[in-house]
Image (cartoon, rainbow, N blue to C red; front, top):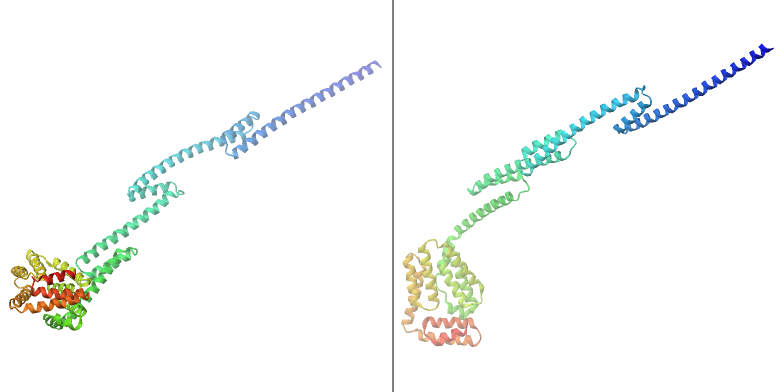
Length: 418
């Protein structure tokens, strides 16, 4: 039995050893499996992080995670492939950044130059630089806006130049009174720039000139037609008014109206000195009336405008002095001035007529018939003065002084009418 017992022990030992060896092998296998699982997990986590960073374009961090994955599994190709891809991407990004920086620099240079030219109104070089900038960055709106603005300015310059040239031609025609041609050019200018007021104003001026010429032609025709009648009327008015009769029969208003009619008639016939004398008579009769003085002022302006030569000025100066003296009944002084005026213009009729009137008054005084009439005039004046009719009183006192300039009673009465 011993051998059997020993065999049984040996079998038991062998079995135990085999079992223990199997258990040890199983434990080692389990340990290695656990290590591998941990390694796989760490690798997978590193790859996952790296891939996420790669997708987020955080390339340097992604590259570090891929390197970590390679440390865990050096034999894996994927991390190395990704690292190579990241290196390629980084090289491309660096090149793209450098290219963009160069593009930005060129763009900025073109914009700077373009703005400088634009601000100094050098639009053609400005346009070239804005176009270059737009070519570099087609998506940028600023150079496009500036290009549109320059095109508008240049287009407006062309319009302005065309308008200016037309206006120069139109104004030339206008100055030389070629109104048909001028009007046509001004209309063309309005076609170029409808908003301009100047061509409209000039067209209106031309239309007004044509209207005036037409009216003047009509007026000349009417004047020619009425010439004979007007001459007849003027000739009839050369006769002195019967002032006393009008005053006694119709009153001061009627006499004033007749004096104004005569003054206006001579004014219309451009006999200004004669007209002024009649206006002065009307003003003496009714000093409160504004119209005679207005006409006298107008005549003085007209006469001043007509005096082109020294001879004209001297003649008119003598006439003014003579008229003033005549109105003050200084007949001798007036006669001297009228003769001086004739010395300047011997063919003038007005001073001759005034000298004739002076001679008539002087003769009337010398004939000795004036005393009775002076008394009559003073009595009529005194009656008008007492009744408050100063204009009538003034008229008769002045009539008395015409016949006797030294009559103190008439002088005193005249001073009371003023």
